[in-house]
Structure formats: C-alpha cells, structure tokens
Length: 348
Length: 278
Ligand SMILES: Cc1cc2nc3c(=O)[nH]c(=O)nc-3n(C[C@H](O)[C@H](O)[C@H](O)COP(=O)(O)OP(=O)(O)OC[C@H]3O[C@@H](n4cnc5c(N)ncnc54)[C@H](O)[C@@H]3O)c2cc1C
Ligand code: SF4
Ligand code: FES
Image (tube, rainbow over all chains, first blue to last red; front, side):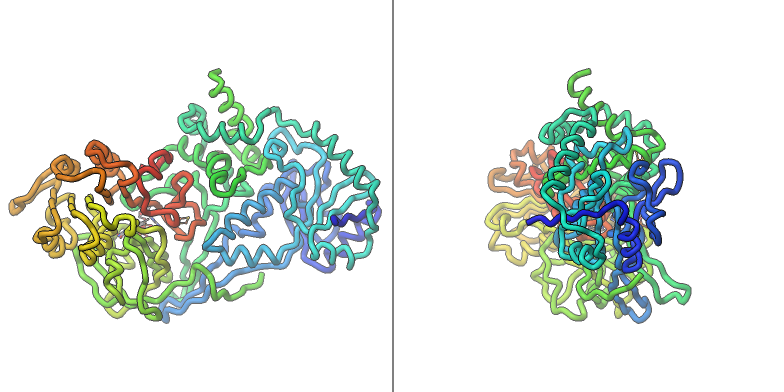
C-alpha cells in the first residue's frame, strides 16, 4: 500500500531545518536571473522558490557522476595501483520529475554489465527528495512530450504542493525513516489523494508542448531521419562548444586522463566529462574521424536521445528538461529541431 | 569527500611482463607479454586489450597472437602519439598494465567447416594474424584458406618471415600486393581490391574476413559482394576511438553499437545500415 503524508506549509521550515541538521542537503539555489544551481544549503531560505524555478544549469547528475572523478591511484615506479571511488552522503532536495527520469537513465547505463562500480556505490549513498511542478518552466520545457511530467519512482520522498500543504509520497524505507524521525508530518487521507488527482488532471492541459506526437510517432520520426536537411542546417549554426552535452541529464560520455605528481612517480587516473560535439571525440589513429562534420555530430547527439537508446534501453534519453536549448549559444532548440523534422517529413 | 578502495573496479589493470621486444618496421614494434598473476590471457582471436602506462594513459591494442599459443600473448604497436610512444620505450623485463581482453572476437565456431578468405590491409594484418594463426593451428577444421595481403611498400610488410611461411604452405593460397614496389620486389603492384576478382572461390561456403584502414572496407566489400559472397559472411573488424573498453565512455559508438563491447568484429549485414559504420 502506498504511503502518503501531509506536511503543512507552516511546518516546512522546521522540516528543512531538521533535515539540514542531520544531513548534508543540496537543493536548487538561485544564482541570477533565470539561473539556478544545485548547491549545499544550510537554511530553508536558500532554496529557490518553486514559482521562479527553472531547471538548474547542471542537472543533479553531478552528484551521481561527478564532472571529474579519480578512478585509480598509482605509483608508476613501484607499479602499484589502488582503484578508488569518491562519495559524499548527501540529500538532494527538490529534484523535479524530468531530473528523476534523467537519473533513471544513468542508472540503466552504469548498471549495464560490465558494471560501473564507482557509480553504483555512489548512487546508494544519495537520498533523493523529489518535487512536483505544476506549470511549465518556460518555452523550452518538453517534459510532457517525453512523458516525464509525472513522477515514476526514482525518489525516496516526493513532494506535491497542494496549496496550504504538501502531500508527500514515501517510496522507500529510507524516506519513511526521514518522515518518522523528523516528526512534523501527519497521515494523509483519501481526501488528500483525491485532491492530488485533481491537481494532476489540471496539469495535463497546462503542460502542452505544441508538438502533437505519440511516442511511437516520435520514435518513427527519428528512426528515419538520417538524411534530413535539418542536420546540415544545425551543423552550420553549431559552434561545437559542448554546452548542450554538459548540461544534459543523460549525457555521460567521458575521457580518461592520467596525471602524475611532482615526485614523478605517484599519480592518478581520472575520468572527466567529454562531449561528442568535440571534433576529435571520434577520431582514430589514422586521422580518420567518423563524425568530422558538425552536422554529423549534431545528428549523433539527437539520435543518442531519440533513437539509439530505444534499442538498448527501451526508452528515450531525452527527459524534456529543455536544458540543451537554454544553454545553446547558437539558439539550437530541441523543440524547433523536432518541429523542423516533422515539417521536412511532411514535405513542407 | 570520502575515498573508498575498490577491489572489483573495472579500471584495475593486470600486471604483465615484457619478455621480448622487436623493431618490426620504422614505426611498428612487436611485444611479447606474460601476465604475472594469471597463467594465460584466455582471449578469442580478434579481441583487444587496453595497454596501460601509469602516468601516461591507456590505448586499445589488438591481440595479434592466437589463443592456441598458451602462456603469453603478442602485440604490435605503431607509434602515433603519447601512449604508443610510451609503449615503444618499454624494454624486456619492464612491467606494463593490461585490461581485458575486451570485445567480441572473430566468430571462430561459425567459421569452422567453411572456406576462408582473409583480406588484410596494412596494420590490419595485426588483428587478423590472431585468426590466421588460429586457423593454421587447427587447419583440419576449416575448408580452403586464401590470404590476400596489401601493403604500402615491401618494407612495410609486418611479420615478414611468417608471411613468407604462409606463402610456402600447400594448404594456404596466398597473394600479396604493394602500392609502391622497390627494385627487389617481384610480386603484384596495385591496390588489394585488384587481387579479389582472381580468387577462385565458392561464395556460398566462403567467409571473407577483412581488416584494414577505414577507407579500405568500402572498396573491398564491393568486390566481395560482386563475387557473390553473402553479406552475413563478410566479417570486418572496426577501429574506433576508445577510452574505457567497457561500454561506458561513448567514444566508440557506431549507431546502436558500442564497438568496444559489441565489436570490434561485426558481420557486414549487422552494420551496413548503421550510420557512420563504414
Ligand atoms: C580495437 C582497437 C585495436 C587497435 N589495435 C591496434 C594495434 O594492434 N596496434 C596499434 O598500433 N594500434 C592499434 N589501435 C590504435 C591505437 O589504439 C591508437 O593508435 C592509440 O590509442 C593512440 O594513442 P596515443 O596516446 O599514442 O595517441 P594520441 O597522442 O592520443 O593521439 C594520436 C591519434 O590517435 C587517436 N587516438 C587517441 N586515442 C585513441 C584511442 N583510445 N583509440 C583510438 N584512437 C585514438 C587520436 O585521435 C589521434 O588521431 C587499435 C585501436 C582500436 C580501437
Ligand atoms: S550548445 Fe549549441 S553550439 Fe554548443 S555544441 Fe551544443 S548545439 Fe552546438
Ligand atoms: S571504449 Fe568506452 S564505450 Fe567503448
């Protein structure tokens, strides 16, 4: 049986206060106009207001898969090695449904054999508290098209703001333990659940992307788009800066680099986020690059969200958060790309 | 931030000792290696290892010896950059890190009982040698064997003694061509594709195994299809940029495949519809 609790808004401060006294807590924090980041908070006042919130610049993937991570320590002279992983026990508060979906994608990738032990250990040190959105962030969001506007697990606790109180869904024992130990919650009733349903009904109409495609249609659109002119057009505009892949919640490509200390014997091997938009990403020793043109690299980025993962993981790897569109200096917008593909196919 | 030691990290390397080093050509060196803690690498022909030099990095390198040779394995490395230069500095007695073997090798069990046509261009002979040697060591289990070899010039021919011994065998049909001859060269001159039409084969029972530089595939495969060899009987080994070897870093992606795990060996029908494969 699903477990729900109520948290009165007057009690919210106490809850977050208690949470920060027990755990390291990170949450979306405002850093500028339309600019939010997940950062450590010590008081509830630092949390970005849900009305203002749009997806953070970098998604919470940075806690699961840090931008730079040591994987091996070594002594090159003595030929000794030690494989390592780094972690912090952190509560991530205020994770929206698009980002929950992103984490689920990464979980699939890193648990695929051969397993990525570093990721899998770290993921279980993190506590996730999700939060529902009631309105689209901005014109770039397309979570409803990707079917990620409603929660589908992937959290310990999930908060839905129902006016003067939050309704909280408990998804794990860890979540239940937080509720029990902080003790500001009351049991929810059937009335509360009905109210949640009503709110979600209304959400349906608020979340309109202006793109009317079912998932099979979206799959089909990207399954047969290899020769589309759209890619040439994007290739001409793209600057290959890699912003789009850095901010993507499901981009996980990395480089592996060695660093040696000043003693010239000890050092570390680390992995660091890399981008398929870099020209030499797919270059091989003979000098041949398999995606030399920007158009090919843009197409690759899109197909990695809308085509390839369907064969391997049976899901889209676009969460609909819209970050790539917001971050692109060349104004390459994912919704526009999809619309252009539709138009091109329709022969317009 | 806390650091934990991992005993099961896929990034841990196995220690291997360098037991023999030979300069093969101007840019290529041969290495014979033995694992310190394991009796054998236990690989399939066509698989590769990540060779690791602490402080420098890792590079994917094909295993060029057949698994029928137990207790050691062999590599040939062309010096092109940072890691490959560091590998070239290794001497007998040195230790080097190895991860793997990785990837899907040549489908030896499917090849058994069939005729084989090997087509090797340049450095492509290196991965292919693991299979040629395997076939020669189990010669009875296969049908007719043709080997076609293409090189830039006679001095670039790798494993020269061995290649000459293949040419002398009565159970192997061998031809070689060079792009540019030198005064002592008495063989064919021209591209490797020019050798294919003259091969006498039964396309229904022939598997062609092709390994070479990226541009070679398109032309060779066209000739093979003209001979009537079915798409699924054309086997290739593809090279891609690789950083992890374990299907995570994304560098080696070819459409739906990760070359390091799903390849590097593919049949032509598996990849022909994949963007950017050939
Ligand atoms: C499956 C496979 C098998 C291979 N087998 C052999 C072999 O048997 N013998 C051999 O000499 N070489 C082989 N290579 C090529 C070899 O891996 C590269 O030459 C090597 O990684 C270059 O590293 P570097 O640090 O010396 O060069 P760098 O200084 O890093 O760069 C030189 C050039 O190599 C390219 N490159 C860099 N890293 C890689 C990488 N990880 N994978 C592919 N290309 C890269 C760069 O884009 C650049 O063009 C193989 C490659 C693959 C993928
Ligand atoms: S953010 Fe825009 S300009 Fe930069 S690589 Fe991505 S698509 Fe190209
Ligand atoms: S080498 Fe990293 S995914 Fe293949």
